[in-house]
Length: 204
Ligand SMILES: [Zn+2]
Image (cartoon, rainbow, N blue to C red):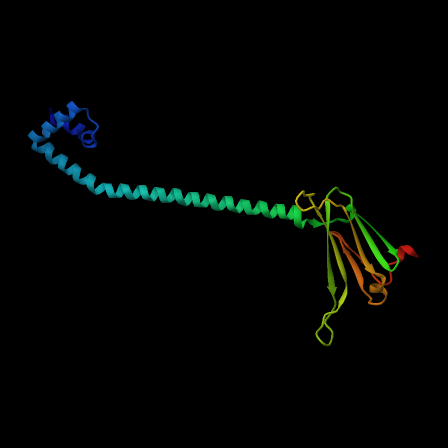
């Protein structure tokens, strides 16, 4: 075997890719030829030092892949949270009702003042009521001066049993006449305020 052929075959020889006969020929040439033998020794040494580098590259690659996966998982989780928030908003919190989507009527039944709300846009009605506090008095006590009624519209949900579109709010007439309370119906576009002077306007 000529030197240049042996040298051409050397990488494959070292990787064990040669046929058995060719490998035998190369090995025999190496035994006989000092030049090729020392080249083989050099190549072997350089491969030995290159190996840890290659291994490190592989580890870096794996780390990169893992980092990518972590990022993907984080992104998927963020999307999941967004969806949950959106569903919560649509089904549980809802948005304030516009005046055009709500019909409200008031009536006096015995000693009770009633306000009936009817949502007309096909969505489910959920009504929040909360006290309205006035300014602090001398003792630092905040008196209740009324009730805030906030209708909200939700997507009808089979889970939350919120299929209703009507709601009745009632309070004693005393709360207007005796306690000087007001009832505020909060809509997206305006507040409708019932006070001691106008709560029974329709009855007059
Ligand atoms: Zn040679």
